[in-house]
Image (cartoon, rainbow over all chains, first blue to last red; front, side):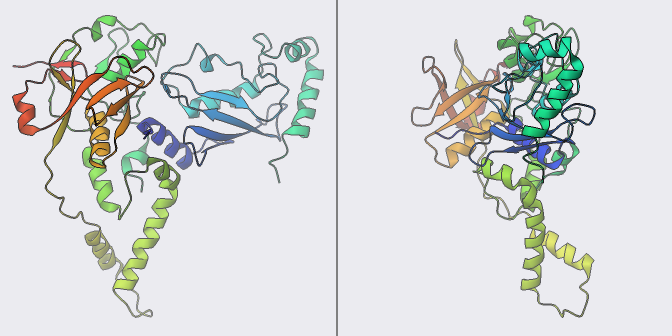
Length: 154
Length: 242
């Protein structure tokens, strides 16, 4: 069956490639234009600085009436990201709006790396550590960044 | 090759949902934010919690018997720009959108290079003599000038209303259907109000992709047939007749 790619997805992809977000790359898969390979550089002001995190982003058939599905592929120590890479971010769930785009979603995830929110946790053990001993949590996050998020850096 | 509108990014007339120039612009009464009629209808049907921009309330009344003074035979808003861009594009297939994406950036450069090559091959110039750039450019423009379009009658796509009578598809969806039809595809998929639908050309019917239940009839007509059919409206908006 011929499945036509909506104009919006074509346009968003063109704009992402022509005018990328600093610190973020998003490239459509060669065999599936709804599947994006994403890399986000850890923000300088965060324990993830110096790391590059791989994510996958998928645009479901209902997009943009439904949110993209995004997941971290690189292991990360963050109170709002669990072991499976799932992200606790309201705009990916009940606060999704079709006026948001791939670009704005990825910017929000980048911002989440700068501002972990242990009050709304997904990884409860990480959030607990973040609340009780922030210095230790940040140290672990830095170690994990060094161990798992340096693969793509030459 | 990217058209100038694509490079400029969002404009005032761009719908935040489909990212195209608005068709049947419709404002939410409470906040005034504007979208294409069917995009906004899709938002409302999907229960996405109000205005996509400010999350303010959407009054359902705007979807009940909506009426606008509209040109029932309107074209796709960016048709003129697209035609101009196409004229500059030597031989890009419009069928493979997927490929187009991957090529979109490189194409621009590839085209510039190819156009340059062609020029050199066709008109051998003494390499020591600098060619007249203005003349070259003029010739390149002339080569890229649109070939006279083959005389094809303008066709319209209609769908049968829930109750009775015929409605015209949104011109952008109509264009996709027509392109699939003329390339002899047996079926095609379109997104209407955010939901995928299948158009089956062998049965001339349309049904929601995820539930085959409620099919409706579709029809392809020429301009004269269109005028004779008393089409009720466009994409769910009644045409107010004077």
